[in-house]
Length: 472
Image 1 (cartoon, rainbow, N blue to C red):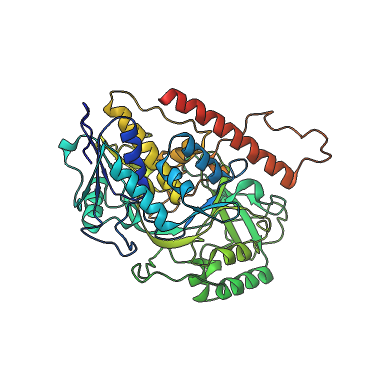
Image 2 (cartoon, helix red, strand yellow):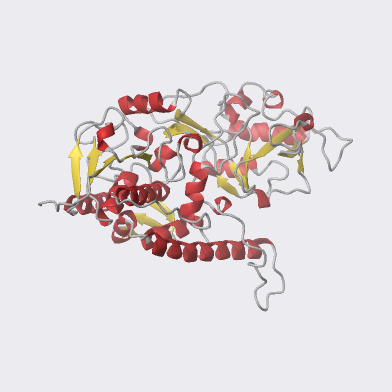
């Protein structure tokens, strides 16, 4: 069909996955023309099977659709409020999945492709972009995801620095701080060291006896493990060995590695030296999330929950993210991007989707949505209006662009790692926002945790609606 003309110069979007498709849609819906560059059709990837835009290469699930007490459900709702193409096509191609939103993957991709092709302000070019966008493109978004082609990946590396681009992602589990049993654990840095910005009590420590340690090592070795995909290879490298691989190298290996007890005294029982210690380090600026130091793993998700809850103090732990080690090209966004997702060294060039360091289909699409809106506002001469951090949009954006704690005590290790949306990224509720339900005899434990999630979800959706009114 004939494309509509516009007084605005086009914005270029590189990558036709979920993030790129959503970014292009948001830009076009704002009245600005878009050129969407997608290499599939000219060059394939090791994971994609079709040439459709927004092809789902793994699961067909967008996870929970509960917007009352689940963070990803809140993100779904916010995207719908913002006119998301990805959510519209998902809703139209939904298949039964209980409380989750799952889709017919072929129908979903075809719907996104058709909508993009039919939009009068979007032009799709099937070509590989081998380098950074030419400067005469002015405004552009790179949304090429974890399977970014080698030439473009190298160009990004050259622009951002040798250590700025990760090709394999070593992820340690992250625990919600309020589910750690502090009657067993204690705060202390090793040898009470006070580092930059530290207090000497920067870690949460979980003590193990010899019997507990031996049982834990046995469970690690026996646990069900995921294999690497053929195209990923086996990306083990120093500093990122999976915890179970270390355990297989000798029963005492972990006690002389990430579980060493030296320099630590159990505040609850000072006279008894722990045989081994698991340390957790604050992972976000809010202090609501802690990561398990050195615990990157290839254990399958079900096994991780069982094995890691064997650790004293984590018996009731809730995980904001489980561990993994896999191919995942992403940039060190907190140092490279400003809060509107613009590359600090290259004004006008934004990044979106998984390459920014988010995990999950809807998370990637939501960052594409924001990048598209920000770029469209800039093209129309306005300053981008950032979503409040109390929204799912804002919480995820804040994590990507600056909410992460940078570690200075483990040289050579990347601190920033990809994350799914979860309530641990949201700021705490205001004092007095959570009250005991009328008639309730008790208000603690699971009941209080659910009420907290419901209050945060309600606040997020209200604040998102207000933001969208302001950002129009």
